[in-house]
Structure formats: structure tokens, C-alpha cells
Image 1: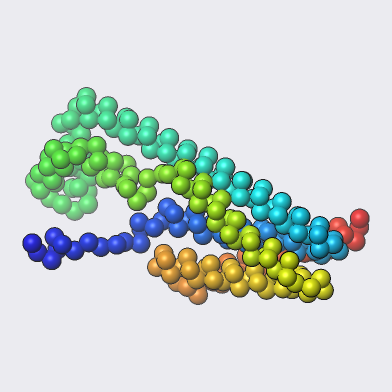
Image 2 (image 1 turned 120 degrees about the horizontal axis):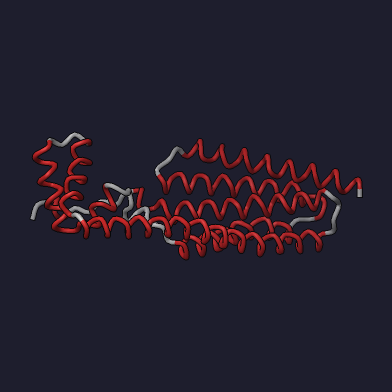
Length: 233
């Protein structure tokens, strides 16, 4: 057996599905809960009221993330299933035409006509639907929609992200609550940005700056609204 036969590579694209849901959930949980806490605190609410608002935000946000991800990814899954069903029918009705269609795809990628046809015929004999799903529809094991996995991942990671600012509320003295929540949230966002970038092979610095900027903006806006409404009310 050659080293090419025994070698198995792990590609970053395999992480796209769960990584996107995990990073989105944790960032959303941290940003939204920290912003909610800062906004309520800026309105001069008591510590117990701030904590209740934060816990309510965690529960509501986790459920919202789960429902949103499930509906969104389910729609993608339904579309994939419909396309695969149509492709299955076309393969059954006219396999010769589907072979030529597949050969045309490979020819457009730079493979000569004779070799393209041979490749298409061999792939059709091995796994016709799989070949068309991958090369015609762009559906692979790495990109296939998994609604339940996405929903559970988003809800769990949202909750994990929201726990940090809630913990700070419990521990921080009243006069330092807002700056401590904001600082811890920015540190958490920077860590999440770096973690997501490293796991996905992206630029760490850009990822950290991106999440820190939007987190700061969200907390600043909610703090301003809380201060304004607190003064008016």
C-alpha cells in the first residue's frame, strides 16, 4: 500500500457546519446578554432586576437561536431533498443524458472530452446520485444540512456565552457592574474570535477586531438607550 492510500487528510471545510453554529451562538449569547445587562444597569435598575433580566434574556435567546437555526437549516435540508429527488428521477428516466451532463461538467473544468466521458461513466456506475449531488448540485457530506444538530449547538453555545456576563453580575459590586460586565464581555468576545479563527484557519487578528468592534457598539448603544429611558421614566 502506498503512502497516498494510507494517508487521510483532515480539512477545515469539514468543520464549517458545527463551527458556524457554535461561534454564532456563543457570540450572540455573550453580546446580547451583556448588552441587555448593561442597558438595564444604565437605567439605574437594582442588581436583582438586572440579574432577572439577564437570566430571562439567556432563556429567550437560547430558544430563539434554536428555533431560528432549526427553521433555517430545515429549509435548506428541504431544498436539498427536493433537488436530490428530482435528480433521482432524471437518472432513472434518462441515464445516458445524465452521463453526458456529468461529462460536460468535467469538460468545463478543463478535462478533455474523452477522459471526461470515461470519468462520468465510471462515477455513474459507482454512485450516480452521489456524483451528481456533489458535482452538479454542490451537495457533499461537509455541507449537508443538519437541522437538529444546528439547533442544539446554537442553543447550547448561546447559553455558554450568556453565562459569563451573568456570572460577573453576581460577583461585581454595584458601582463597578457596568465596566466589569463590558470588560469581561470584550475579553470573552476576543477569545471566541481567536478560537473560531484558529479552528477555521482564518486570520486571528481580524477576527478579534471584528467581534470586539461589534460587541462594543452593541453595548454602547444599549447603555445609551438605557440611560435615556431611565432618565425619562
